[in-house]
Image 1 (spheres, rainbow, N blue to C red):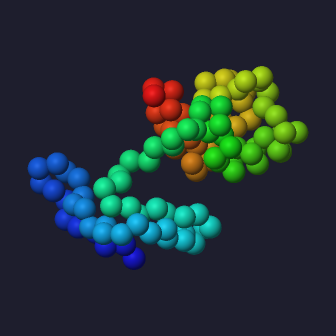
Image 2: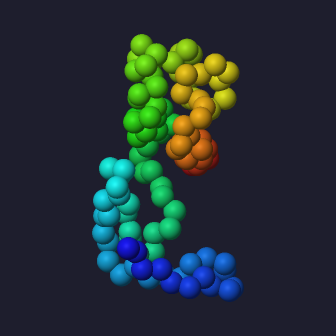
Length: 104
């Protein structure tokens, strides 16, 4: 289990407890990066076009549709009828990361 600290009354955020960098294997096959001073992921060098390749769920949905989306250059966020958009667990994370990359 990860060490956790108290929540700061001033900032409303958790207090830092991590001292070393480590990767923790998750039961579902993913990895969790626990790093000191790192509280917001940034995908350096990842473009909005590349982001979908970071999500196996997107690749699986495209594969189920013959390897492509309904729309050329689909970003899987606003297009109606997109085969990727929808009810899958990490879709809100995809949209959030897409928006962050677009802003930078």
